[in-house]
Amino acid sequence: MSRKYRVGILGATGTVGQRFIQLLEGHPQFEVAALAASDRSKGKAYSEACAWRLPGEMPEAVRGLKVEAPEPPLDCEIVFSSLPGDIARETEESFARAGYAVISNSSALRMDEDVPLLIPEVNHEHLAQLDTQKSARGLDRGMIVTNPNCSTIMLVLALAPLHARFGIESCVATTLQALSGAGYPGVASLDAVDNVIPYIGSEEEKIESETLKILGRFEDGRVQDAPFKVSAQVHRVNVSDGHMAAVRVKLAREASVEEVREAFASFTSLPQELRLHTAPARPIVVRDEPDRPQPRLDRDAGRGMSVTVGRILPDKVLDYRFVALSHNTVRGAAGAAILNAELLVATGRL
Ligand code: NAP
Image: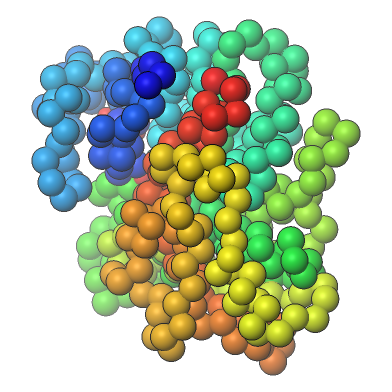
């Protein structure tokens, strides 16, 4: 077996950071070697700095690691970042300049023209942006690759097979997003219980812009946005994990409901071909029961990496409607970043 890459996690004590540690336990290619978080945690052993909130025990291998400041040097080659958006840009750029491969969850650099906003099943060809990035930023070995917002990932994975087969002319998406999407402690319990909050800062804008970048074409050294409009409305609901979206699409060419279902159900791509460790066998799981998907029943499909699609029906205003669901801290965050890193290794970019 080939050697293991040493990885560091920035924001290691947070909701996404803990998910990274859980998913990387026993990973065949990556070994957690460095952890970083805020001044609150710096200098402490991870077991002391982190209130572990996932089921099961904190992995033994990280308990004694000392939490460091999120700045180079760290004893690793790859840095997974789950830092808050406001500090991510400067920190991630400094790691890339220092020669690290930065695989980020944060929103700060996602829309930069030279930064791949990657879903390996959808736009792996956008990795060519790394060539422009290298010269534009004067990077030597360092690089920056981002994964999309947690709701965007779910929406785009569902739209990708429809866009490829029939073309999408417009899309309207209404999300119902889990509490863990706001990190820890997140939304106060008195705001969450018995309630729905129709606002998540900048989320609608992120879904609308990121979707078009990811589904855009890489031409003449840059990504041209996909030529359709997306309208998104978001809501925070009283669910622990698992984002949902009610989606309506207008297609460029006519398709039967069977063809639409088949496009979802048969969708596979490069990560499945390459048998990447974190890639689910089926990126989209179709459920035909009238009352699925549901967060509690479907968020762990494909070990949290599959998007579940159900309620596929003709729509009287646009052409089709469906409901999508995925695990926001696995496919929507840590699992997405790990899959990105696996693709970089498999394609020889790391
Ligand atoms: P979180 O639970 O609040 O965790 C934040 C982490 O960042 C903690 O490790 C915290 O360390 C660290 N941190 C905070 N301020 C810092 C500072 N000034 N310097 C260094 N480290 C600092 O948040 P989260 O939900 O994990 O989200 C992290 C990032 O991932 C955000 O950018 C978020 O938008 C993105 N994201 C989240 C999700 C999700 O479902 N939660 C999905 C996709 C993307 P301490 O413990 O030391 O304070």
